[in-house]
Amino acid sequence: MAHDRSLDLFANRFELTRHVVILINEDPPPERILYLHGLGGNGKSLLLRHLEKRACLRTDRWPDIHDTPDTELLDRLTEHGHQVPVARIDFGARPAGENRPQEAFSALFMLKRQLAYHRIPELFPRSEVDR
Image (cartoon, rainbow, N blue to C red; front, side, top):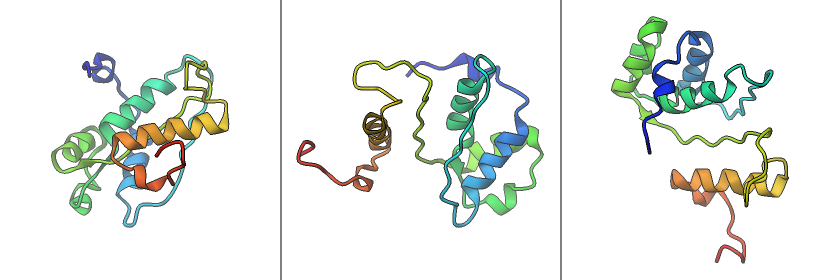
């Protein structure tokens, strides 16, 4: 996968980034769905890519890292954390092939494919079609 340079330029979303990092590193982590909404064009998709690549890390050293200043938090987390599985759906995306996020059944299969990338297929019961 190509390096996304836009993520290198992403800045100043410390409060939300810290919120996501705290949720992921609570013990045990809460079972939550985060819903991000806003007007089109203000950076929601870039923010989600940023969170997915840089903030969705879990570490056993969280008590040592928790009080790190915002500007250093992600660097410290990257040193000691491991990636957690992430799946997301853009309900505003246009349908394309099998990906139809506005249709419930298709959206579930979109999530299933994303989680299978993280080797989490056992969360979904197999159907006769999958066998």
